[in-house]
Image 1: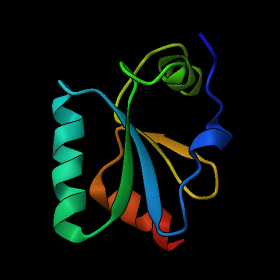
Image 2 (image 1 turned 120 degrees about the vertical axis):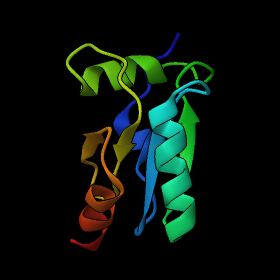
Image 3 (image 1 turned 90 degrees about the vertical axis):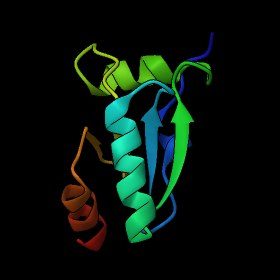
Image 4 (image 1 turned 180 degrees about the vertical axis):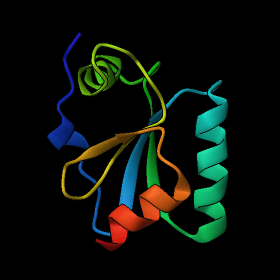
Length: 91
């Protein structure tokens, strides 16, 4: 299994990459809010994309916490609120 790198998932300006799982209620809630407010995102299911669970663990102190979001500047946030996402994209 290959280890994914954060640089492989840097999103376009004004959008985010969201690592998630199908069953994650926090992921579903964030996706709903992003959809309602028009924030663009690419969703990556860590249970089906090789190496991404390990990447998420590396960003979260060894824990596979989702949603983990990657911003265009290469930084990440764990379980951010919609406001956090909007503020980071506006900065």
